[in-house]
Image (cartoon, rainbow, N blue to C red; front, side):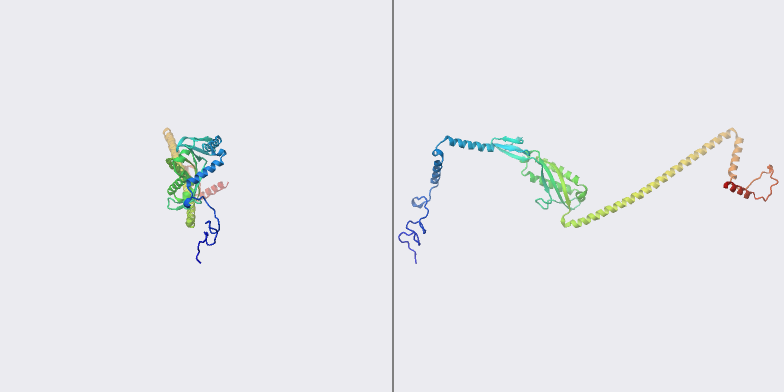
Length: 365
């Protein structure tokens, strides 16, 4: 059945003729001619009237009100003008955005806010880690000088020595330190074999990285001092770890064989040197002996010659007798002088056997 608005009914369910709605009288707002919404200026004016009524004295110019406003402004200014610098901090004041030359030491300070602002810097030692556990999983992968890939984990300890430069010379100092550390480590590792990074020369590499980082940061004017660079671990990537271990074992075996060969070589070389030294000493001793014997023979000959010059006949006879004695000393023959009365000697008497028997008897005694 079609709906018809009879007797000023508000809807199909009745509810009176006041137009409040199908459920009766509804909330009513300010009514303006032509069903227009309320004006914004009128709403603001009503709010101001209500605020004046809520204030003491009806919202008039009261000394108490001005006093409260002044106190509030002073409190606000004090909160902004006074600032505290902790013992591990230094502060830089800025006048219209321009940093001042002097630094604010620990303690309570005041500045002219809002034309001056304050920037604080922590001067304690900071640490960054590069490698495993850092934001980038591949930040520690580097190429060594012998074309090997190594995963280097290291940490850098640094502190702020110039807060003014730290705040205003670089945009992000901490991130810059990380980038500079990675760059310096890659450069130094790229000039050395992987073995130096793994075992042999970590301390020298860390010192070179610290020096390179400090030079770079000084060029940037970052106001940062690098205290320590520490290589915590260096290993091949996990994908080639087994193969690298095999290579390491082969290198260790090579070193062992080379050491054994060096020991054998040193042993043989020592023996040869000892024999050579002995031969040289024997030769020197022989030469000394021969020279001394020759010198002795020469001196003896000179002494005999001097005697021969004094008594030639006697010396000549003495030399003959000594020579014959030396020649006949080892002879097995016995010579008898006929002038000495040897006519009665039996020709077949075995004088050599007698002499030999006498010699043997004398040796036994």
